[in-house]
Image (tube, rainbow, N blue to C red):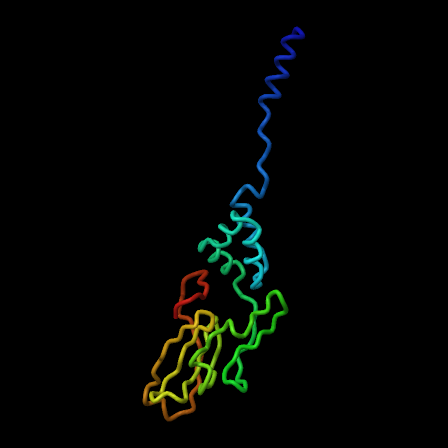
Length: 179
């Protein structure tokens, strides 16, 4: 093989080499998997979304949020709902930056003249003692929403107790809004 042929061969081999691999952070699927493994703390996703618009788009995607909730299964305990001097109130238990201010949770009319019966899945079940009608309220303190559930007259004579239950049976169901 002549010297000029050898040089041409080297050029072809150099030109045939694969392109430089993309950075792992340029591949959305890989980045999504990394972000999915952030701790389920209140500050994790907002901080990640502040990195850049691309990360914000991934973290704000409803599909990603469903996957994030399903991946972590059990969200952290943010605080407790208790009776205080001003009625039912939220008391946060996490340290900053994950501490949720009490005013972030809106119990509205649920906060006065009520007894807390149960709190699960982000919902609070309270017995409304001041209403003209006998009822319990299912409150979503994050959304500030509530549903009135009348108590059957047959049960009105007894000491009232209750629990928030979920009837969803599909595999991987994660509790969200709507009850």
